[in-house]
Image 1 (tube, rainbow over the protein chains, first blue to last red):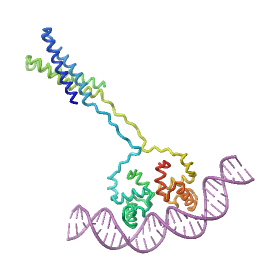
Image 2: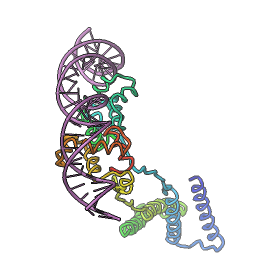
Image 3: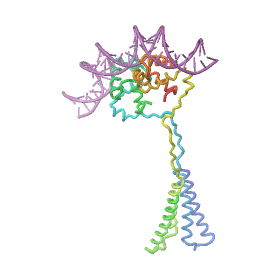
Image 4: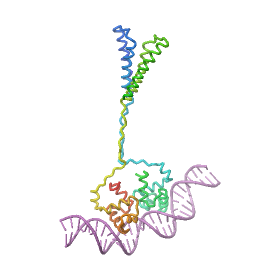
Amino acid sequence: MRRTVVLYSLALAALVFILKFLEYRYFVRDLSMEFYLGLVAVMFTALGVWAGYKLTRKKPVVVEVPVRSFVLDEGLLAQLTISKREYEVLELIAKGLSNQEIANKLFVSLNTVKTHTSNLFSKLDVKRRTQAIEKAQSLRLLP
Amino acid sequence: MRRTVVLYSLALAALVFILKFLEYRYFVRDLSMEFYLGLVAVMFTALGVWAGYKLTRKKPVVVEVPVRSFVLDEGLLAQLTISKREYEVLELIAKGLSNQEIANKLFVSLNTVKTHTSNLFSKLDVKRRTQAIEKAQSLRLLP
DNA sequence: AAGTTAATCACCCGAAAGTATGATTCTGCG
DNA sequence: CGCAGAATCATACTTTCGGGTGATTAACTT
């Protein structure tokens, strides 16, 4: 960028120098206005193209694309009024944990987990944990 | 591209017109050479930038990427000695069906489905249907 | 201060899932 | 033909799930 500006300025200076040089060297003071204008127009157009190319050129961006891209739709979660805790339970269900194992992992009682799963199922409108997994995946709530 | 060239030409014509107009309208024939040159330089630089931008800009390429490509690894199925029927049951489990629903769909008894699921679980080395889903997906036996 | 939501836990009961064992029928293959 | 593997079904038993109801507490929102 800075380099581009410097080069551009140098080119400008060179142009002025060349013009002046031609003017005084050959005493061709009567070169028509149109000639100068045309010359300048052509040169600066070229310069503009070059500068614009340099300045607007975007560096190629390398994007890592995961095999299974997954972005949780939090809006949908809110729409379904699924709480954080319920979502945690959902994730563990999808990993294949039993209610007891979930209870152990979250340091709550089995009954609490059952309550969460029950509420979760009614919010997802399903009857079984396997249905919950399937539905959550299709709704992009789970990878 | 063609459009760009046309616009560029029009802009050029407009510039000449404006210059001539200024020249004759106000009789300011003595505007310095440097002023014209500067004006022209600035305008054509801008034009050059714009034209270069238009001409070198690449159109974004849209690539269709399948959301979830899935190819069943039949060799792995054979390795695990999972039979066709057992795989059918596995698919239905992953869809969220209960054993009874699977029995109805396959026109067999509930006990038969239970036998299949039991054998399936031991072959997948899991204890629950939710684990079976998770494991089958990670093994690419299921989408 | 009163109301709302989330999170927690309990108890009960029935349904579903899973385990173990054994048996019968069917089918493809050497 | 005979046998192995697959598919079928049964019975009995244990574990896990899921539904319903009710209650308490903490953290908010109004």
